[in-house]
Image (cartoon, rainbow, N blue to C red; front, side, top):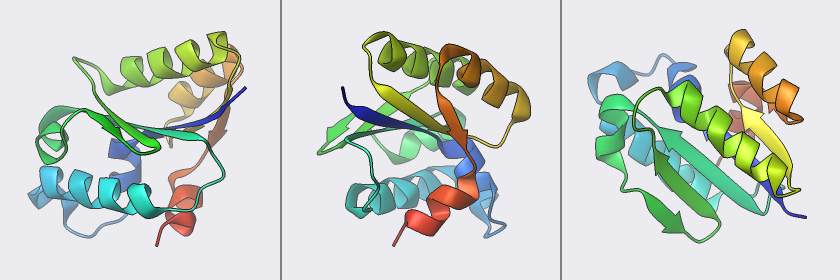
Length: 123
C-alpha cells in the first residue's frame, strides 16, 4: 500500500496573493519545482493542473511527482485520481480548499488537507 498525495494546484497557488494570476504557468512551474524537492510523508505526489497552468509543466513523472493535465474540470480529474488510488488500496490525501470537493474525495475514503498544510511542507 502506497501513500498518495493529490494536489489541487489551483487551490494551492490561489491561496497566496503573490501575483500568480499574472503568470499561471509560472506559478504552476514554481509549485512543481517545490514539490520535486519537498520532504512530504507520501510515496507519490500527484499534481493536477488545469487551464493556463498546464503551460508551466509537462504532464508526466519526475521522481516521486507525477503531473497530470486535467482535460476539462480540474475537480473531476482530482476526484478521478483519488478514486483510482483508493481503488488500488493506497492511502490517499488530497490537498484542496473547496468544501464540496473535500466532501467528494472524503466520500471515496480519502483524507483532505488544506493548502496551508502543504505550503508549510514546502521549501
